[in-house]
Every structure is written in C-alpha cells, then in structure tokens.
Amino acid sequence: MLERWDKLPRPIGLQKGCSMQISDIQLEQVDKQIKRLIEADNFYGRRLKEAGIEGVSSVDEFLALPFSEKQDLREAYPLGLSAVSERDIVRIHSSSGTTGTPVIVPYTQKDVDDWAIQFARCYEYAGVTPEDRVQITPGYGLWTAGIGFQAGCELLGAMAIPMGPGNTEKQLQFMVDMQSTVLTATASYALLLAEEIERRGIKDKIKLKKLITGSERSGEKIRKRIIDALGVEYYDIYGLTEVYGPGIGINCAHGHGMHVWNDFVYLEIIDPETGEVLPDGEWGEIVLTTLVKEGAPLIRFRTHDLSRIIPGDCACGSTHPRIDTITGRSDDMMKIHGVNVFPAQIEEILATFPELSSEYQIRLSHLDGRDTMRIYVETNGSVDWEDLRGRVARRVKHRIGFTPLVKIVELGVLPRSEKKTKRVFDERYD
Image 1: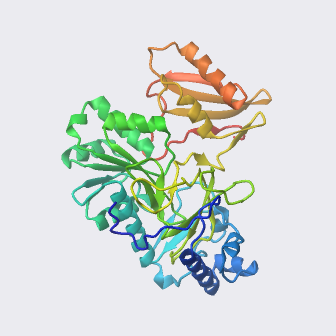
Image 2: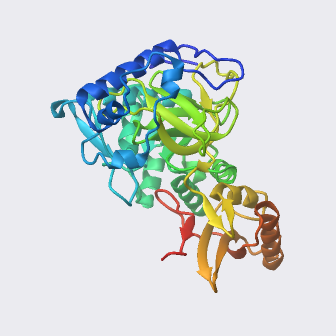
Image 3: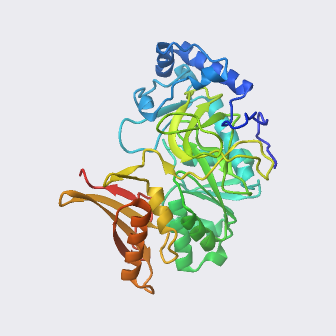
C-alpha cells in the first residue's frame, strides 16, 4: 500500500484483552494540546482548568479526562472554540445540522493542509491515481464535504470536477462528456444517479470505476443496488466537521472496515451508557481526540457514531486501526411501546426481504392514546403485496417485540435525495 501522505506511520501498541491503548507519542501530543487549550483560555481550556486538569502523562490520566459533546461546542458559539489568535484563522466551517445553535469550527492553514493530506491518503487507499477524473457532488460552503474532497484530489494530482450537489441533468452530462472515473457523493445521491443512469440506458457511455460515499450510513442493500447499477468499487469515507471533516478514514480494497488516521486522531470505542472504554471487537460509540489540530483541538469528543475497532491486521498491510461500518448513532434511538429501537435494526430486518428495495421510511405517530410505527417499503407489482406486508410485520414483531403498520408502495415512490435521505419522522409531538 503506497502511503505518500503518511506523516507518522507506525504500529500502535496493544495490551492483551484491552482496547487499543494510546501510545507514548500520542500521549505527548494530547498533553501539548491540553496545555495549548489552557494557555489560550478558550471555552475548552477554561473547562479543563475548572476540572483541575493541567496535562496528562499516563494512560490512566488520559482515561480520566472528561468527554466532550456537541452541545458543549454549541455553547462556545461563535468562536469560543478557537485556540489560536484570530489572525491565524484562515477558514471556518460549520456542522450540517439544521436545528440548534450552529457549531463553528475555526481552521488554521496547517489544519487545512493536514486535512488535505488525510484526504489525499483516502484517495490513495481507494486506488485513485493522478490519472483519474473525480466528479465531486457533495455540497460546498460552510459544510466541510465538497471542499475537502476537492483539496485532497488536487493534492493527489487527480483532475477535480467540482460539481457540487443537485442538477442531475448536468451531473450526467459531465459524467459522459468528461468521462469521470471516480464519483464522490452521499449514498442517497449515488442511488438517485444510479437509478437515473439505468432509466436512461446510458451505462455504456459512462466510465466510472470507483464510488466514494460519506456523510450518512449506508446499509448493504443500498450498496449492492448501487454497485450492480454502476459497476463500481464502493468505498466508505469517515469524518465529521467537528474534527476535520470527511477524510479522517476510509476502507481499503480488502474490506468494509475503515482505516482511521491515528497520526491525526486518537480513536476510542466506549459504552454509550457507562462511558467505559471497550476492548477491540466490541460495539460501542466512537470517541475521537485530535492530536495535532491547531484551530479547535478536541479532547475525547463523543461522536455518537456506533461502530467497533476491528481486531487484527488488515491484509493491505496498513498499521492504521480499522473501524467497522457505522451502524447508526447512539442518539438515534426511538422508544415505542417501552421498547428501544434503532433505525438500523429495522433496516437489517427489511434487508432480509429480496422483494424490497433499499429504500424505506419510518413514521412514528400517536393515535387513539397509543404510539404507532408505520414502515413504508417499496416493491414491484409482481409480488403479492398483502402477503409481503404480513411477513414484514411478523418479522419485525419477532425481532423487535411489537407489530408495526407496514405500508407497501411502488418501486421509486419513496423520495430520493441529492443530499442525505431522511428516513425517520417522529410525528408524535408535532
């Protein structure tokens, strides 16, 4: 595996029976970050000072550091997260959420450069070369997606085609005319494009070889649907605005596990309920600490993304740790009839029915004094809809513990999105 942009490639020591342990080099980097935050006297630094924390010199001291949350970052609005002087801030980004106070994340020039290095590494792990033409459909602006994909592409030396989101007609025109070989998109928009290419019968005019998706969780069914339609290699990229943006990890050609760049971030998996650090292989919530970020360093930031550290070495030879496919978020839980349900559980059940498409909607409502879950699914006209509806409802009842109302619609009726697809609608409190 060629790693032109690896700055500190090294194995991380493991303790038998324990989760991946922070190395001495990483511990020194965290100590420097904590001292910088306290010296800057920013929002984060004051929190650490109030907790009596001056630095870390051991694993136990690191594990005693408090977690941080997105709400903490909101309270620092607008520039309270900055650990540098304003003249050193060259850019800001904001998370893509549409509700609540925005999280403003400042970047220094080094942060921007480091992010591009990580993204270029992602492209290399996906087998992208300077000969490729990369069509970039994620959004630009305050959101971190589009500009990150472009910066990494340009650093690698590939041709960037910065389309941005939407305008499907022009996307397809450029895909054909420019002979794009790599498509970057949300999984939802990749599905929309794949179905439109099939509908128009223009697959033979398109030269896509690879697809890199991020920003939303994608199940196996939607992945298979896109791969079958486009004939591409499928890569998942990981990241979040609060850390750098997309690009802090990607899967290689040997599996779905995403390598995380542990020379830039330190990775932990914790029990979402207790905060206990979990051993490799156990599922929990991803926690990230930035090791060299200047503008807005984060210490033990709870992402709420659910995954696990994949034990053992990867066949590609990389020493960067791997996380499994994101299964959902710890804050996505729905409670109905006293049962805790995650959207991923419903998706897993629906994926067992070959008659159904990858698309679904969950709508929660309160009718006649009780909560109701309606699940909308798609199929074609060649199956017995009533029989299928009953089988889906029974399987959900068997796996989850209550019977939903299953609504079946024609293939293509559920909305496709040019960004992220919203699948859960809680109407109980509207």
